[in-house]
Length: 144
Image 1 (cartoon, rainbow, N blue to C red):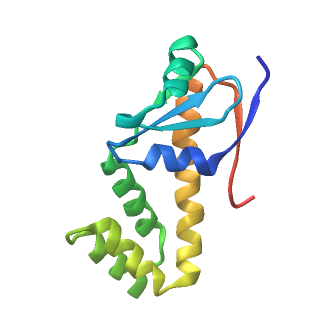
Image 2: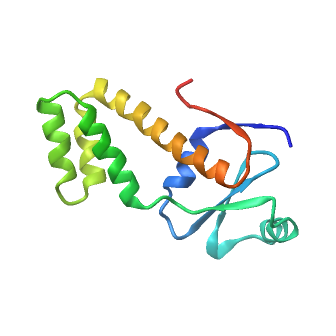
């Protein structure tokens, strides 16, 4: 099988999606993502998944703790100062994901760095997942 070239952004979204209503499947042959509503899976999608069970890999979302750890790792690499303190405080409060993003909006230059850091962290997770499933692929970052 030839190595696939895959855009990372759709896969990142699937790995982050904590919604119980959605299921994401990775097509080992094309590198495309098949997204279906759990309760409203169409006949076509069901037949497709049933006809080739080895072709489609169900994507389990990463635990929210992993997302939290990625945010925390980002805060740790920032220089000491106001931005680092505000982001660290956001992580220690209720709804840390929302608060973290709210703080970032006040600092566009740091927000850009966050999105690059976030993408690289998830690309590493996805690459390991693909390797674990024997899928040879090159991930193309959104930032490329």
